[in-house]
Image (tube, rainbow, N blue to C red):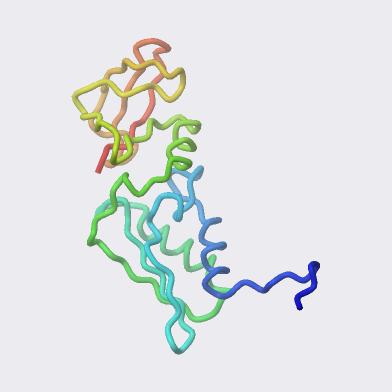
Length: 166
């Protein structure tokens, strides 16, 4: 019988996932690489090597190397590690959880619609993450990165970025 005060030691895989949940995205630090859906798998090979499969938000993402370095630094204490990149299937905004979408909104970035919701095209207004107003205008097809567009709210006049539905 296990004592109620005893705590189970997490497995290496559980420990790896816990550490990865603490690795922030370098461009949007309000989300971890796990919340972004970039960590596709964590497996342990027979020789004890942890294999982490990462999918960047898009193949030309300038933060890909920084993300890999941060993941490597976080997991190094767990022993042998190999990172691999998977581009197929391509990352999609559908991999963002409702909680991640809300964190983006609170951070001031309009999240894309979820897969089951009606998609917002780049030709139609995007709701403002600051005041919630439904009308906005696109200022630029590209924001601070190619995966985001720059918008301005027509009510509060605040500029904001919008993650393009990919």
